[in-house]
Length: 151
Length: 151
DNA sequence: TAAAAACCCCGTAGCCACTTCAGGGTCAAG
DNA sequence: CTTGACCCTGAAGTGGCTACGGGGTTTTTA
Ligand SMILES: [Zn+2]
Ligand SMILES: [Zn+2]
Ligand SMILES: [Zn+2]
Ligand SMILES: [Zn+2]
Image (cartoon, rainbow over all chains, first blue to last red; front, side):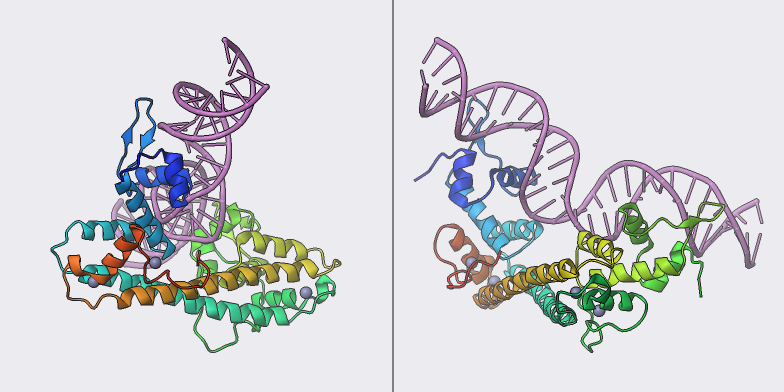
């Protein structure tokens, strides 16, 4: 019920590199564990859950700062959850923005790629030609569109 | 025809922070410019085009290493352009991968967001509830799908 | 019983593409 | 002669790890 894990066992159980565990401890995201007489870290069930929580949030690409904030909110269960919802909302907006930016980017790269069918020499390379022409002020195939910039 | 720009003027003309220009010089991406008697950098047309080239590639989210490689290819106009095309191909594959990963991520976050309609107290927050439950080994709404992991 | 393999400790540096900072020097206008 | 705009350098900070160097300990094997 209350496992006493060493750092390597915890790492395997949670699918995390053990350096990452030490890193989370160093930045204050994972509470400091007990130590054996020889100085080895020993983890309990609370650590397993906390680490799983962190990894789940990271899988959702939240920043460590966001995860830290979520922890703080969770320890004050009386307050309004508006701040939590807002955090997710803001994160979602960031993700969405990156998503549309990447969609533009992919279209631009596809267009660029289409300008060269391999097997030419470098001088004739459509891709390089486009990139150089753009640098000299001529329009490029990839950025002539009417969509907003992608970065 | 051959402008002699100081770093600040080049920065404005190319829409780049001037620290970024010095950084590109330091990492060997932009050739070292001439200097005035007082040590100020002076740039010519070649620098303007090179910097525009870099920025255009960066707008396509290429790494500085990729841009460096493109430069190298461009200086050897006799070879086959296959390596150039391959570079774009590889980059495109990376972008596409990130794109699908972000699409998954957005769906997951939307699902998570739907578990809470604001105005509750923290203890009742659907979002936090989901995150904590997932950490305790129960399934989560955001990662119950059959699509592959997003990171 | 001893050597080898596997595990653990700590601190530091490296990754990327910048950005920021500290602490100066140079030059024209008021 | 001071103010402000511009320029210089080198070092450190960002995020989220990852890798390395140089140890100590524990367990397994020969
Ligand atoms: Zn080509
Ligand atoms: Zn373009
Ligand atoms: Zn809520
Ligand atoms: Zn989930």
